[in-house]
Image 1: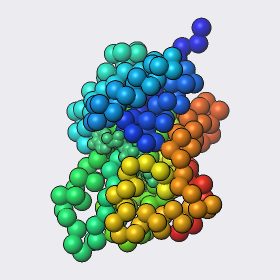
Image 2 (image 1 turned 135 degrees about the vertical axis):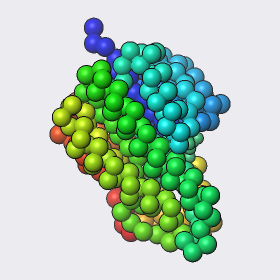
Image 3 (image 1 turned 180 degrees about the vertical axis):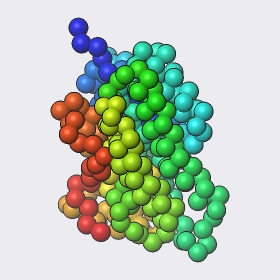
Length: 247
Ligand code: NAI
C-alpha cells in the first residue's frame, strides 16, 4: 500500500491556504492545517474530515521561529514524516512609504518574510534529517515583481520570498529537496480587502487578464501540481498563478 504524503500548510484557515488544505486532502494526503486563527483553522479540519480526509490543526504564529519548529515537529510526531511544506500565511495592508507606520512595517516583514524563512529552515532540516525528498513551496506575489503605490512593506517581503526560494533551492538540491515559489495575482480572499482603501483593489482586478479576480482554488490547484513528483524538474522557480497579470 502506498503511504500517504504529509502536507503542512500555513495560513490554512482562510483563502488560498484553506483551499490548498482541501485539495491536498482530497487527493489523499494527510494535512496539517496551521494558522493562528484557531476557530477558522478547526473549521478547515472539519471540512476535510466531513469529506473523508485526514487532518489536524496546529495553532502557530509563523513570525515566531520556535512555533514554526514546533509545527514541523508536531507534523512528524503525528504522521511520522513531512513531504510538503507550504509556507503561505501572510498579511496585507497598505500605507504610503513616507508616512509608514513602522509597527505595521515590522509586522509585515516578520510574518511574510521571516515566517517563510522559518518554514524553509524548519522543514528543510527535518526533511534532510529524515532523508525525505520533499518540496517546500512559498507564497510570493506578482507584487514581488511589480511596484504599486502604498504597498512598500508588502513588496519588500514578496521580493524576499522569491530570492529565499531560489537560494533555498540551491542549498537543498543536494538533498533532493525542492524549494520554489508560487506568485498569485489578485485573488478573491479577505487579504485584498486591505488594499481597498487607496483604490488599489480596483486596479488589481483590472490588471487580471479577463478582468476577474482569481479564485483561491485556482492557486491551490497550481500548488498541488507543483508538489507532485511529475513536477520534479521545477526547482528554484517562481511559478505565476495569476491568470495573466498586466501591470
Ligand atoms: P487570507 O487572509 O485569506 O489568508 C491568510 C491566512 O494567514 C489567514 O488564515 C491568517 O489567519 C493567516 N495568518 C496571518 N498571519 C499569520 C501568522 N502570523 N501566523 C499564522 N497564520 C497567519 O489571504 P490569502 O489571500 O489566502 O493569502 C495567502 C497568501 O497569499 C499570503 O502570503 C498573501 O500575501 C498571498 N497572496 C495573496 C494574494 C491575493 O490577492 N489574495 C495575491 C498574492 C499573494
